[in-house]
Image (cartoon, rainbow, N blue to C red; front, side, top):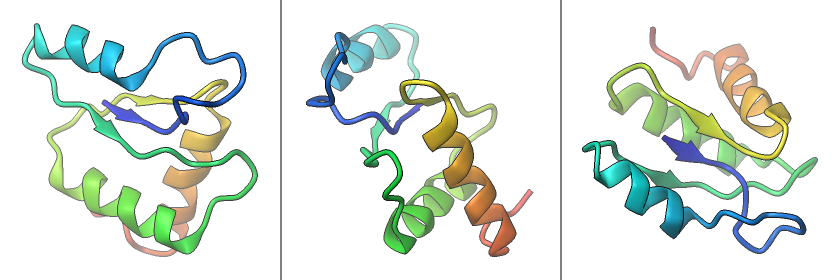
Length: 84
């Protein structure tokens, strides 16, 4: 699981520590990669690609609506950073 929603974002009722405690019961790894909506940086894209390429699939990405996570994936893919 890659969590792209910052804990302090307005309306966020579930923190990454709560998600991590749930996931660990099922031996699932959680990475906290907070990204500010509408402000994805090249560093964010490269960090995401590193996680994506290293982790076993499937990967669940979490943000508020899915837009941020989708944008990260496609920006990394468009730059040739995703190895599938």
